[in-house]
Every structure is written in structure tokens, then in C-alpha cells.
Image (cartoon, helix red, strand yellow):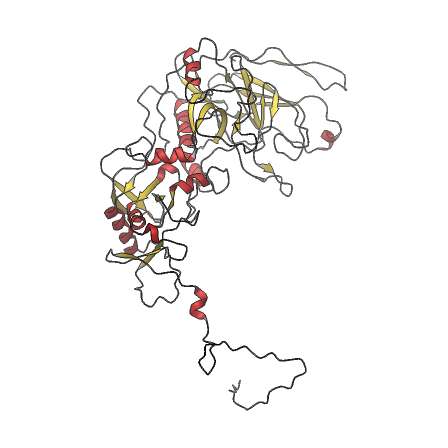
Length: 547
């Protein structure tokens, strides 16, 4: 049956005893973690071009699959491809390797699992083999995809050392995920609030035991001690008040991602939210048998099947006192969907530093830039195909041709003049938003994270393009742009101009209320006092007879 890593034996005790499980041996010695680093892979099922200095074709598509090709200076930015190497896959029907996790009770007022009801101490058994149906290990292809998804949708963290990945004796690399629970057993009797609480079972669980840097791992130790700041184990976040990081901060971060069974399931999921870190429903995390509070979705009192809220990555740096000894992370959840686990030492990349990376010409993470002529051709083509949403505030613009288009030079996020106009390569509009404002706005974890500022589609920073046409607009009229004058009028022949100050809508409807004498003084309606006589009817009115 494979090596049994943790053995649980039940002892017959009195009814008042709440401890009926004895752990006979501790966590095993972790496999060696010293591995050669590999370039970050490109996620599967996402189309990205290679970054280079030469020309290429950039295709913008509409909702019907039609495309408007425009020659761009570079293709969409993406991490480098993984060099070819032998691949292995999970094997169905492989021998089971059972392991039992003892999850501590979750009975405090603010539940660690964000559940409404408490849970007693439980013992759950999982299969730690590589079986794709029941095991908690993932193969290299799945592991590479998880890494690429995190790099694309969480670019504020650069991975320095991956604790989750393990290498077996044959040199094959494996990742970790949550797997179905084979056996679930409550420890001790339910008394008090527990006896009246709603019962539920843990559906999936996982264990990570590689959080250790042994003395012989000199290369790993040297890597973690390099850079602007070294690891500060056992310390809280840099700023205790704001809980924010600065570029270069090095932390040990735990993140999770759902694993898709089919491409259709992946696409359906990505329409609802960005592919960022997400805790499974009812996640309970413990480090060395000590529960840890995490920010996750909460169970709703009006519907117990509904869980709502934001999922924040877990910073373990402050709770790991000694990385030289094995640290055991155990995760149990009420979610039956498998989730990949990623525990790694990462360097924080602030929004300004990320902006520099995206805008560095020829850099590995540089985003493409449309030249003026290319961007103008795309905009005019969009007009011809009626793919542009009109953006005019004028209801009575009789002096403008109906085919003229107007675009604002103000960023919709800050409502100030844009500096770096960008939009998503797949967005169905020409209007842009400011890149730096957008990156600062997406630091906060929320439901609108990584949404386009205009059409609200989910876009990764590496899926943006810089529009050279808007750059030309801004270069020539930067000093003239204000909240009252921010519109550019683009004509079908390709000419354009900065429009005059915006008209207030109510001015076009304002009545001419001057008096007969023409002195411009507004006449006020006479106020009729209560009890005043009604003016006589002079009969000057129209009568309509109804059949």
C-alpha cells in the first residue's frame, strides 16, 4: 500500500475524554529541494505571441469571432517557453499511499474555515499518490500550467523558490493539490454547542511537508539570502498598520487555484472572475497543528450553500519561526473541487516596478505598442465595421457628421489626462485607459480586479497594448486637456482635432426666459396665494371631442 506516513490508532477511553487519537510518528523527512530553476512556462489554452523587436501581426477580434488585423511592433507579452524535456503524467490505478490528517477543532466564535457552524476535531485520510482521480500529486504539465497562471494573473509576486514542488528519486517533479477524503471520522463526543451544531464533512484535503531549508541546501540558502532584502522568518508584514509591501520585500506566500477538468469548464470559470488566487470553500489551514486565520469567502446565513467574499493570499513568513526544521502545512476544505497548492518564497513587485517592466522595450515582459499609422488604421476599420461604441456627450451636434467618432483623453479611473493609453488586445472598443493608474488600482483584491476599465472584460497586464494613435493625441494636446475639454473628434478620412469645451446638456434645453423689453431679466412665475380668485376663462383653448 506504500509507506504510511502518519498512523492513527483509536484508543478505548471514558466518555468524558475528548482525545481518542494518537499520532505514532511525525512528519517524514522532506525530499531534497535543491533543483535547477526552469524558465516560467506559458499557460495552455491562452494565445500569446513571443516578445521580440521585429514586426508581427496583432489580431483584434469582436464577439462574433471576426478579426481586424493590424501590424504591431511586437506580439503580446508572455513568459518564455519551457525548454523541451521528458514529461511524465499521473498514472491511473497506481498503488495508494494513504495518510491521515488530524485537523484541530474549529469552534471559536470567528471560525477559521469561515463556516457558520463549529466543527470538532477530526481525522481525515487521503491518498498522497499521483493517481489523477484520488491522489494529491500533480504532474509537471499541470504544475507548469499552475505556475504560468499565477505569473500571468498575479504579477505582483516573483517566485524565488518553490516549496510545493518535489523531486522523486528518478528526477521527476511533482506538485501538490487537494484530493478527495477517503475516510472521515470525528474525534471525541459532541457536547454543548457542538451537539446542537449542523453537521458537515470535510470533502478534500492536502498536506505539504517541504517547508524546510536543510543545512546541505546551500544553493537554496544562498538564493534566499540574495537580493535587496533577505528573509525575515517569524516577522510580521513590513507595515503593521497598512499591511502593504514595498518592491523587493521577500515573503513566503501560499496561494491556491482551482483545477479544471475540461477547457469548457476553464472558460466558463474565467468569464466570472479573473484567474487569481482562490481558497476552496470552507478552507481550514494549520501549520504544525496550529490553526491559521485566513481571509476567504464566508458562508451566508440566508443560504448555507452560498459563499461570498474575497480570497487573500496567506503570508506564512510571520508564523514560521525556524525554516531549518520541517514545517507541516495541512489543508482541509468543504469544497469537492480539486485545487492546486503553491507555497513559495516570492519577491514583491510594486505597481510602478511592474509598469517599468511592461514598458521596457525588448524586455521579457514588455507589452506590444501600436504605431500611430497602425492604430489609426485599426480605429478606422472599427468604424467601418460598426464595432465601436459611440462616445459622444452631444445630443444636438448638428455641425458634426454622424460618422465622426469622439474619444476622451481622460483616464476613466482617475479622470485625469492619460499618460500611457492602453486597452486589452481582445477588447471590442478603441477607447483607452492609463496603464499606471490601472496597475495601482488592481493592487487591492476585489471582484473588479483585472477588469478592463471600459468594457469590464477580464484582461491580464500581459494582454494589453499601447495605442500609438492616443499617444499622438496626448503629445499634441497634453497642455490643453481639462475636465471641460477632453474630446478628440476622429473623422472617416483619418483627420482629427481637439473639440471645444463640452456643452452642458441642460444649456441646450434652457428656455429663453427674457422679458418683453429685452433687458435679459428672467421673469418669475407669479405665486398664487390660497383663496385668490381664479383668472377668468377667455375661451382661448382647444376642445377635443371623444367618440
